[in-house]
Amino acid sequence: MKTDIRNRKDIELLVDTFYDTIKTDAVIGFLFTEVAHVNWETHLPRMYDFWENILFYTGNYNGSPMQVHKELHSKCPMKPEHFEHWVIVFTTTVDQLFVGEKASEIKERALNIAQVIQYKTLGN
Ligand code: HEM
Picture 1 (cartoon, helix red, strand yellow):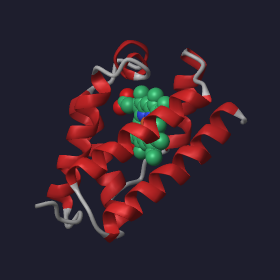
Picture 2 (cartoon, helix red, strand yellow):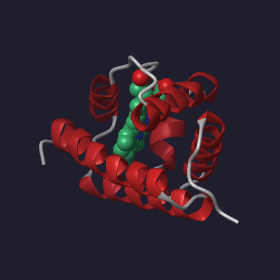
Picture 3 (cartoon, rainbow, N blue to C red):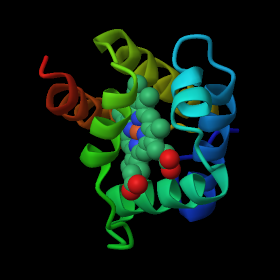
Picture 4 (cartoon, protein in one colour):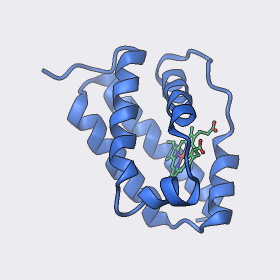
């Protein structure tokens, strides 16, 4: 039976599952693997911190996502469709694994942050 997102272990499962899908995703996978050449060993723990801080206010994330996505956009222009697709994959992954208040909250926050990153990066 599905539970809500309760702790860091649950966030790790969500993040790992999400990026497993993203790595081979036909629409945006190449941005991670061929444009950014992401080092997954460092990226995944950073994303655990990012989402744990958002859901549980741990204060353990201090990166600069805007800068990272602006740099990516300068290497390979991104489109609104890329962000829309990111949100669909993220939301689908959450729904596959979890149900509850925190699960709803993380989907809402992801959509809002995606819109802000998209606006600040693409200007639309
Ligand atoms: C088309 C959509 C997106 C693409 C292609 C993308 C791609 C990337 C890439 C390539 C990195 C750098 C990874 C590395 O080299 O370590 C990154 C970092 C990151 N992304 Fe995204 N991203 C997207 C959307 C989002 C969204 C919607 C969020 C949040 C809801 C997000 C949150 C982050 C965060 C927190 C980092 C780490 C920044 C840091 O502290 O270094 N991304 N993303």
